[in-house]
Length: 154
Image (cartoon, rainbow, N blue to C red; front, top):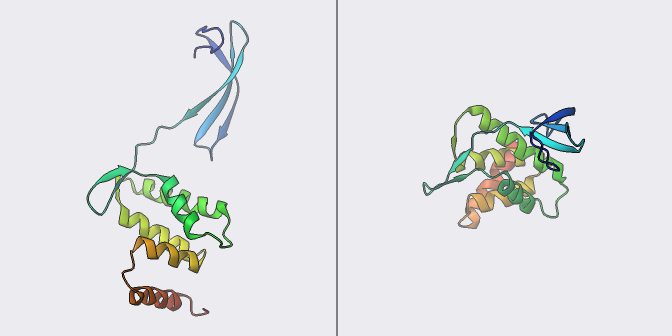
């Protein structure tokens, strides 16, 4: 590793510790020539997940897009941001464990709705109304009936 201060090509690792849920390693290094200390990160390079949209186009999976959609659905609802981040994390983990480099957007949307329905019913209906593009009130009412079947206490 080259020292960023003097460009000497020799450093030693002073300290290492896992970061980012043990997906990366943070290393403190020291230049063997000038003694300058700096930090590096070592991370596993994951194969990209490609999302196949309804029209057949493809784009890279974006956890940020899913999180933005969840935040929008949960606006003015008592749902903590870390709960939404955990939803996104668990969905991405499930998709990567499946081992497919391409995944249909419908599959991702259904996973989001499944997890969101367990967190907040109002946010679920908001997300579903955008995702499923409810055309009229009857489709909306049918979705509400499905929620009430799953949770009779409502």
